[in-house]
Amino acid sequence: MRAFLAVADTGSLSGAARRTGVSQPTLGRQVRQLEAALGQRLFDRQPRGLAPTDTARALIEPARRMQAAMSEIELTAAGRQTELSGPVRITASDMVALHVLPPILAELHTAEPGITVDLVASNASENLLFRESDIAVRMYRPRQLDLVARHLGDAELGMFAARRYLDRAGRPRSVADLGQHSMIGYDRSEEIIRGMQARGLAATHDWFALRCDSHPVYWALVRAGCGIGFGQATLGRADPAIEEIDLGLDLPVLPVWLATHRSLRQTPRIARVWDALAAGLAPWLS
Image 1 (cartoon, rainbow, N blue to C red):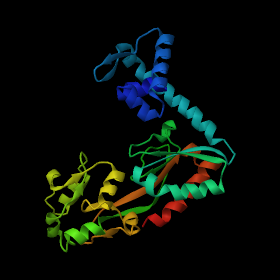
Image 2 (cartoon, rainbow, N blue to C red):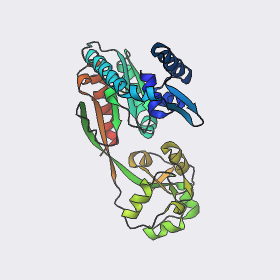
Image 3 (cartoon, rainbow, N blue to C red):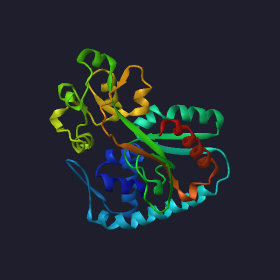
Image 4 (cartoon, rainbow, N blue to C red):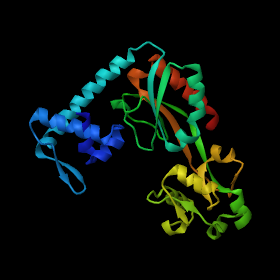
C-alpha cells in the first residue's frame, strides 16, 4: 500500500523511489503484487509516467486511512520502547546535513554506539506523522497538532564572496556598487530576488551572472570566486577563504526548529538524539 500511494502521488516509479528511499524495481514488484492480489490493473503506463486507473483512484482514500492506522500502530509501539539503542532517522536541509550535523553525530556515535542514525539530506518536508523521519531539523515552525516542536534559535544570513574574487573585482562599499559585480542567485527559486526587491534593490532573474538552486553547489560557486552570494553567517565567517560584505542590509534570519511526533518524544533513544542535536546546534544559532 505504501508503494501504491507513493506511485499514485508522484506519478512515476522514479518519483516514488525518491520519496520512499526504496529502489524502483522493488516498488514495481510491490505494485504488481498488489495488482495480482486485487485482480485489478492499478496504473496505465504513459509517456511521462504512470497514470492511476479508475480502480486506483477509488482505492487512494481507503489506502491513506490504512496508512494512517499503520503509522499510528508503529508510533504507539515505538513510543513504548525503553532501550537506549536502535535506529533514529533524522531529516535536515542539505546545507545543515552537510556542514553542521556531521560533528554533532560523530560525538553522539562515540557516546552512544548503540544508536544508529539515518541522515536524510533534503529540503523537502519529510512527514513525521508517517515515520518518514523521527526527528526533523526545520527552517520553519511545524504546525501539525501531533508534533512536538522546539525553537532552537535563528540562523543569521550574510552576504559573502571569496577573498580572491574581491581582490580581483574590488570590494563594494555601497549597495549601488553591487550592480558592478557578478552576483550569484537561484534558478527557479525567487527567494533571493524577492528579498532583495523588498530591500529596495531592482533585482531580476537576469541580474545574476550565475544561478543554482542547490544550496551546497551555490555555496561552492561562492567559494570558487564566481561572485557575491548569500549564505548562513556562521558558515561564512568560519571559512578563511570567504569574506563577509556588510553593506547595512537588513537580512532575514532562518528560524531553526526541532520536531518529532508526540508519541516518540520520551522514547529514550529519540530523547537522547533530540538533546544531542539541541546542544550541538546551539553554537551555530543566535
